[in-house]
Length: 148
Image 1: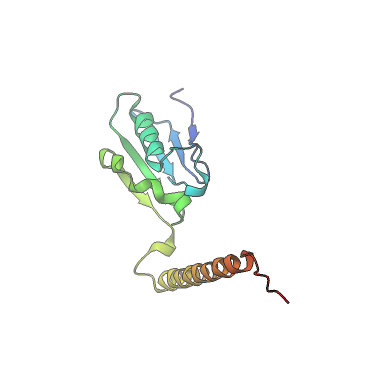
Image 2 (image 1 turned 90 degrees about the vertical axis):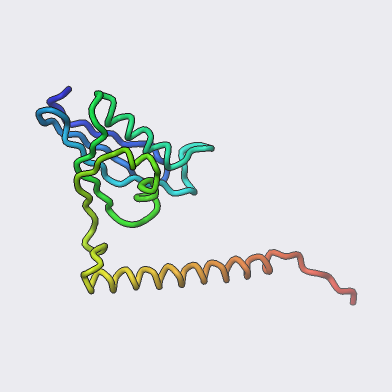
């Protein structure tokens, strides 16, 4: 198997997490693409994003080697793609490079403008949903009957 590409897709429910291993002398070249899950779609009760990180660490040390990932790719900042990166188990893993979209570059004015716009839109959506929930609560309340 050392001469084959291996791709592992972790079951995170609603989200993404892929570990790709490419053959090379010594240890495989490892690329982790995303590590996330959305709380509304966890694969089973009691599951936590930290669970997938424990599996990843177990997989990359199964051959007895050091816990190393050559490249981590964070495709974008949504929870279902990155929430697992906050897990404490990452402190045991050496990551050689992190690749992120150009929109995450803090020195790029265009990227900053896009992020600011996304934040404003997200805030407006939160406000709109809160207002809708309040309106729905009162719309669903039983009407009181008055005697005629």
